[in-house]
Image 1 (cartoon, rainbow over the protein chains, first blue to last red):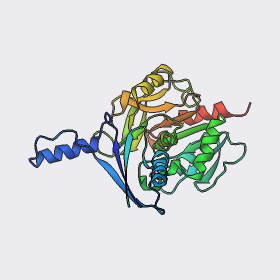
Image 2 (cartoon, helix red, strand yellow):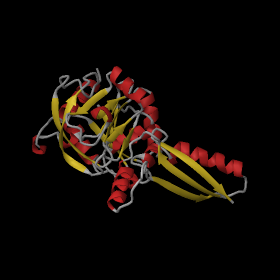
Image 3 (cartoon, each protein chain N blue to C red):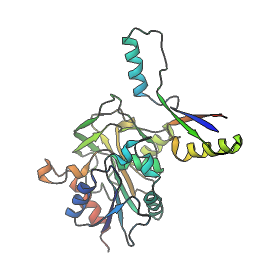
Image 4 (tube, rainbow over the protein chains, first blue to last red):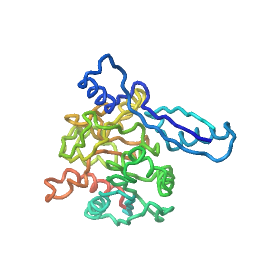
Length: 80
Length: 222
């Protein structure tokens, strides 16, 4: 199975990098933008073909290491 | 006082911290991150600044899951004294021993300069040698020192007098100007500024040495 994990700062946590990206896009002439947020994506292949087991495992990874849940939220996408 | 300084791949203030502790009179052992146990009879663990594991994933995230950190969490749980400076502070928040997190500096720049700190709480073995409200000068050197915590955490830190140091002129966007905080039992201190870099006259001042001397005096066996 393949897992893709999206990790972003929680709403309400200031994202200075997102702000800088927003500012730079503005200076290139892209207008009407708001809530520009920067995050990260982690991809992995997981042995086995049980989606429930894979999701539980990735959930545990996010809780224990991949995301800092004090400031970050995460979304897990699973594909075959 | 029997002290240990933990060394991770990428630590770069470990020897400075050891020198500051030795100059204060401590017996210092360096501990490699793959060691699983802390030396017996230890009074104090120092987690130094640097870029442990290249700051990969998040600053301090990988170090916080290393074998030695499990022992440090147990040590703190037994009432042990732990000081994390700069990357050490980031590691302590990642372990959960201290609340909150350190984000990228608000202006996105790495900042390396002496800053003025206000000593907010003198209720700890680290800060009782200062006067409450005293201004001291200690260098900072970080890219991710922007302290953030949930509103209820910040209220608790203030109410319980756990803000050890605050910036006189906030350089990095930290909530409530926070530069260093104490654990609930006041034995774990995390701070972004580097007291070990202001610990001898040759450094330009000794404001940081006070912390190590005070700690040493407090932990001398009775």
